[in-house]
Image (cartoon, rainbow, N blue to C red; front, side, top):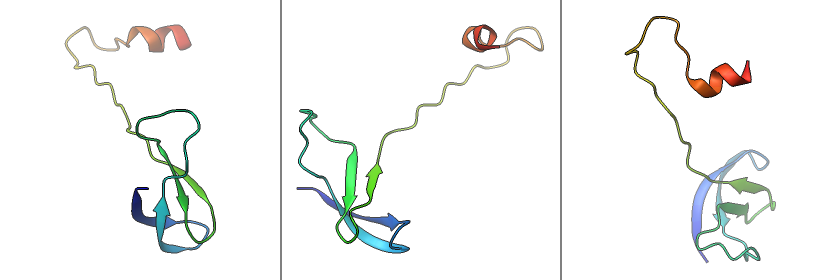
Length: 68
């Protein structure tokens, strides 16, 4: 099992977290569990999309236009 030290909001301190047994068949499960209180923490990469201002001012990305 992979273990790593993270800040637990329930224990209010740096605690040891471990990867629980994964029943979903992930290669690298994004879920971690605090070894003291059992609180779950999901660790996933954050993806940010950036559109440079190359068009006319006030132009919005297509998906933002549809959502409005």
